[in-house]
Structures are given as structure tokens and as C-alpha cells.
Length: 142
Image 1 (cartoon, rainbow, N blue to C red):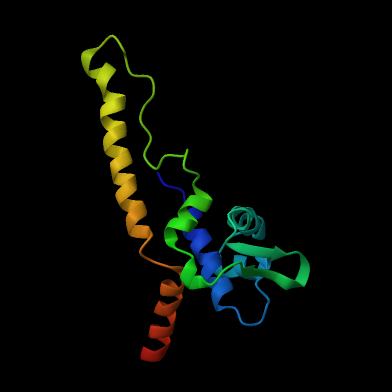
Image 2: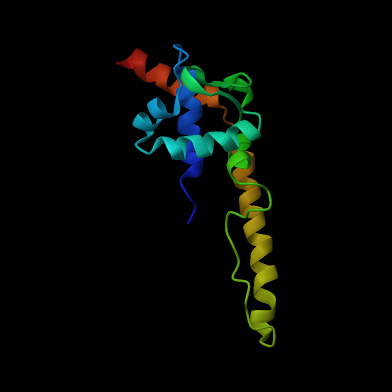
């Protein structure tokens, strides 16, 4: 199961990108996300370490560290899921004496890595600005 950290991270980035009042605080974002401010701060820490946001303690809140059109969903995925963390894991304790058990980890790992690469390539084609633009389209249509 893929954790929801990725979608929460995107929610945080969209809130920051859309915020014009410089009030992008963890408490305010937590209300929109429907979670605890501690969860927001933890995920925002990943985003800050990846250089995607800047966080100022207190009333200043958070801001994007670079323009929204320069932050891809792949960047966000990698901020939340380091390269060493695989999307789909392989059962590590197969029976090495069994002909199928011996081959399964390497057989599956190759396929799973390929699937993850395709997903990352797809995510690289969408930016935070693209997602923010979806809100603008909806506002115009309403």
C-alpha cells in the first residue's frame, strides 16, 4: 500500500502556491487537509529538506522555494519517497532451495522497477503550477 504522504505533500504545496496572504501555517493547512498540524509539519520538513519550500517559524508560515512551474510531481515524490524506498516491495525471504523461490525476487524486482520508472516519468510531466491551474479553470467555469 502506498501511503498518503504524497497526496498530503501535494496538498501542502498547492495551498502554499495559492496563498497570497503569507499565512501558510501548519495549523491553517491542517484544516484544509483534514489532519493534525504535526503531520503537516512533518511532511513540510521533507519538502523543505528537498529544497521545495522554505519554512519560517511563527506567523510567516511556508513559501515555495522556487516557482510552482519548476516543481514537478516527480520532485515531490522523491522528496517524500527517497530513491532507496521502493514503491512495490518484493517478499525478501523466499526459499532459495526452491527453483521458483530462488528466481522470484530478481524476476519481480526488474518488473517493479520498470513500473516505478514509468510512473516517475509520468509525474515529471506535471508541475504544481499545472495543478494550481486546475483550480483557476474551475473558478472560471463556476
